[in-house]
Length: 244
Image 1: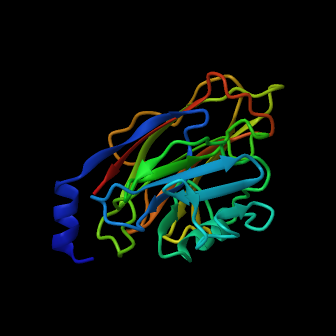
Image 2: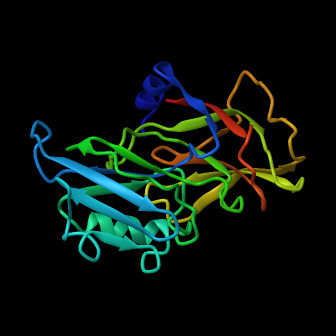
């Protein structure tokens, strides 16, 4: 990254972030590319929590994926193996969002999803079930790129502030973790922030003029609050950042 490009990026920096509540953390995104975007063909993705993901086109299971269109979580036990299996088909594209390749999907970690069709090339988000024992709680990703942009990015993201409110079953301790991730989401590049907070009490890293932490160019920042007994109700994670 040369100085001129870095200066331009900083000059056109854009605020990013949002408030995420229970069951809104995005585990992965998929899209069906079997036909042109303008076609009348449609796709579907059904998640049976802790059991399987079924992908279909025009109402019929797509036999180019998994076992006749069914990706059993007993076989594809992590986000990484699940995404790889989807991407083996020329009909689909998938990428991990606010997660790691090692994140489990075989224990009700993915939120159940019933029939709801979508058009070709439309992005569909599959989400974490935050009430699953608090395994992943609520997660959010600050991304330097657009969806499905697998090229090396000349942009970077920074985290300015994190606010959160937990709601556990029996006042369990709550952990805040902020990681820098490379594009493949294989492992955390480094831990940027870490700490614990009391249950049902708002946490706040505080408002500052500058950025708390930056990721390297092309990397993303994963923010998570977790506990061992999540209860969902009232919990939220609010992230404020910048893309430059």
